[in-house]
Length: 217
Image 1 (spheres, rainbow, N blue to C red):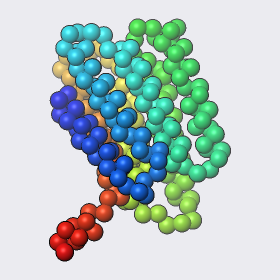
Image 2 (image 1 turned 90 degrees about the horizontal axis):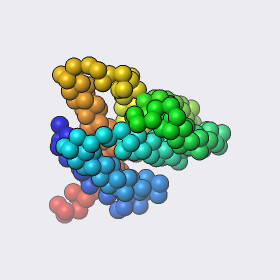
Image 3 (image 1 turned 180 degrees about the horizontal axis):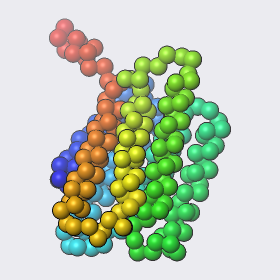
């Protein structure tokens, strides 16, 4: 499953490179290729840690905290109202401090389930607000061609589903190997769905039809 997940990440990275060749794409979305490279590097490192039975708590605590910061920043650029942008900016400033406090004093040596759960809630709330802005918009929006729509859809579904699983991960460690294996499979499938929706976001503005017509003519 980890190899399959890594393949999906690589495909998502390749799809994200097309953002550099799309003139209509906002500049902030073009940060996704380096982000995907970091994600792939962390995934490969995690596989090596698992192979040699090295504790991965610190690695994934730092990376998931970075993920939340990055996703919140992407959503901040995707919304319009200044008050909402300010609220997310405050969350961006305060959240790393909470993660650090949690790592040092509350859950030292463990995965940061407390601040992970908080990060889930922050991203879900930001995604819900993004959809609220869309519904309140006075202008028609072609959602199929809107990359932030696909990104927020993936994030909303992913973090709503992983919140009860990863948020309780330290407490689930005592379960049987088969149950933990099944839970891990569910998490991997959710990741595959997330990066599949990301890939759609990266490719949704490509004009395949016109390119095909030019090649035929």
